[in-house]
Length: 307
Image (cartoon, rainbow, N blue to C red):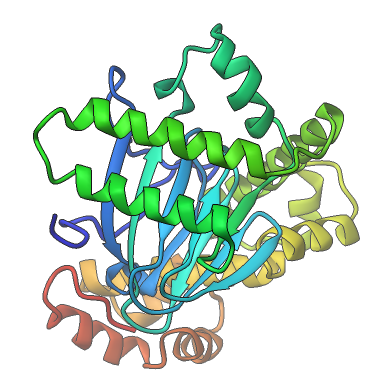
């Protein structure tokens, strides 16, 4: 399978839910071979999906932000990301990450015994993610199973049934070796918290071209400014205003490449009232001026990232 295979941008809706379909309704499973470095801005940006995800670091070192945690994963390790958990991958170099995204319904229907006894408890737990290392026997077994699942995808001989067989074995090892913690009320609280975050992000995405204050962001979910600051720091590891500025800058970067508008016009259209401040912040993020970025990106082959 070709790396990235033309897929170099995460597409989400206003709540940061990924909009791509992983597999099909009758076979909700998808295998990806990706290089984080080839994505826009050398990162797989914030997103979530109702499916679970297993990732293996084949080459390089990835920084993974999952929910409220930040993890550095080296080659040979892996990670499980639970359903509906917001996450992001970053890289400072080429990082190859074969991965699978699938619906647990592939393993059992919701009304089935397997789903109720072994799948639902994991999905409803407080577990946001799990890191796998070859130094722990059961985690090494999971990593080896992941490699087997990847290998099966290149085979056309009963690929689907072999894949499900391996996934059931993998899930069985996962269930046997994790500690299910967190009550249903705690899980609901976490879901409510993420919903509040998504409402605030939606407000920023819709109104980024206009002046936005911290008070206005907080008012969308009826929280105090301190609560909003804590929420952003916990889940996105940044402040609301820094997120807003970076969101504006990324839109400005897109306009620099896709339009012939003047830099001053683009700055104004993306919510920057001061051209000097815009240029300074742009260079901090992309390491080049807006004008240099436009020249570089217009001469960069499609699919390659440029900062």
